Image 1 (spheres, rainbow, N blue to C red):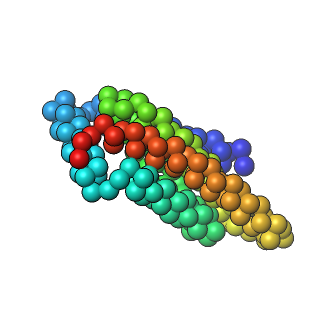
Image 2: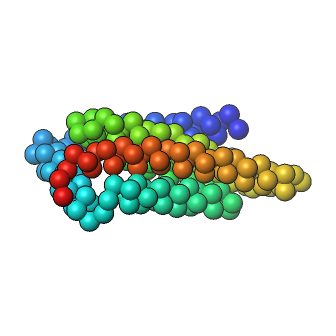
Length: 178
């Protein structure tokens, strides 16, 4: 299991490093256009829905993503999917983190909470999928109950992180006029 945790850390960190490199490789003109796009999207979002609705959308999206991780962990084929998912999440966080440093550190910190809980969920799902791959079926029911209990706790943490993320997004949206 120790090797599995080391691999997960490597995947997440290497994804973040690649995301940072990807952001650094962008020309300044494209970064400015990306900033204008974000501002435009936030203004459109503010015009279409309230801050509470935006926070609700964030919560739903995060919970659906956690459900996907849970289901991927329940099957043997889920291990490669989880590996790819962890790397991609690291990449997007590295890229988005660099971008948000110039726009809103508050949004960056709120996303960091979510990424930490998401990484823990992927770790639990990879561990269970690894147990299935090793064909340790003698204590499968006990392992499944532990897996469900861990994901219940992670679901509560995702709700808390999503709530913080939604509040930060609402505060950021408050800066835009409808």
